[in-house]
Length: 604
Image 1 (cartoon, rainbow, N blue to C red):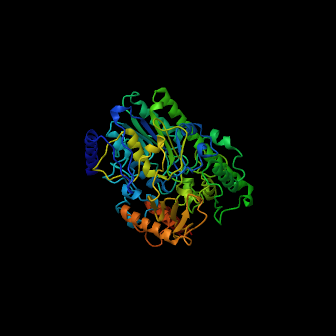
Image 2: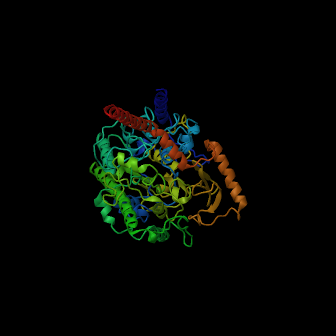
Image 3: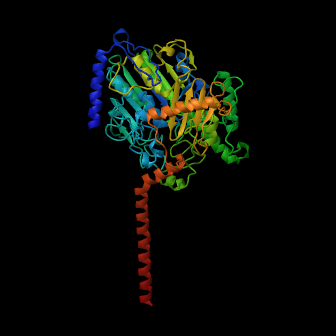
């Protein structure tokens, strides 16, 4: 209640500040300032829709050379700006916290995700894994300016009263309070969860018995938009899709459109994407690209049935993206019918790179899947009851031209698509400069004319409005540094260079230096050739850690071990109940056997 009171008080202060201030001043951590704010009375404020994909790689969308058909998103890209230097965090919760607040994930309150958080780090500042009380979301900033604020999709930014979307500035919301869930029914997708916790406006939601997630989320968001007549007040809508998070599921009519498309295997896909990356300018001429991890499986050496199910998993993956695009198309059509499309600003992006995990073949998953109605087989793959995934080799292929994938801060894990389209955005723009997920909130606040909120923490991101409107110049200066850290995986950018530290099992925890402008594939390590530059960037990173409050990990920490430990802890009550039932069954059987033996001896 006290947290809610502080939020309410801040909103009132924001309204007062909005009436008093005529200029938005959003200062970045490195001294970069936002462009002057729009003044509300002088122009119509745009509606704003942020569409966040889950685990979509840089080149997954059609506008970036992907295999999936995404005509509606491609249309937005043609009419607006396509970013090629956009980076995010390697995991969902930190990215979402930064996207919605404009602050570094530690300052916002979501340093990592709860599934891999060590117990000794819980409740530390920045590691409570909820948006901190003093932090304002973009929804709160815009609601203070008279916007209706709407949300549908994955939340994963806190639990319970005050921490769900209704406590973070959203007027209406249908929110999944978990890292993911089944796309066909309200049920969990992994043993960490005992349910699929859906909430509407902060209360447990009554979900349909069956649905498809992209259709459900877009339909619900459209309903919220239609609750007010067009033009009465601008709206901010946040659509957080489940596509293409595990379980990878899609209607067969979409997946079947890619029959045979991936039969050549993951090596062929990575080579094809690398070639398209050169054609599209996502990879400089002559730049090298790493191959697969040394222990990656040889596609041609796999048994035929394994190749078929692996290829089908990618057909479903592409179909899931196309199904999401089709749902987005219906949203666009509804806005057009309302007469609001021309005054709607769209942002389309992803929270991190592609997902490498294989949940099906983990120890104990067979029993869990059977008890929860899941199967993994070629027949019906991606349909209801199918726990489909793409796995590590496909993730490495999808991450081209980058290295590695989700969880890691190598380029494959954090270089993501970003499309911005709508009023005030110059059409057909390609923006190559380094941009970051924290830049989204100050940009939207700038376009909406949101006023300064001095009582809230200053945002780390910068407004991109000037470059979106067609202005020249770099997004960030050559001496501006940008740090990232999630569960020990860390990076820092400065000018054309990047230092990166990937932790086990793929990494070794050692810092490496790359010229990221000429070598985005991170193939030429420069620490030995440029030790002074390495030390300068390490000093910048140490300053970043101190500023945002990065906490040291416990000895021996790995993401995989912590995920297993946390899942077992979450399932402990269920496991105890099962053990109790088993003990009763065994004890009862023993008692019956004893009585039978006694009766037999008496009869003799």
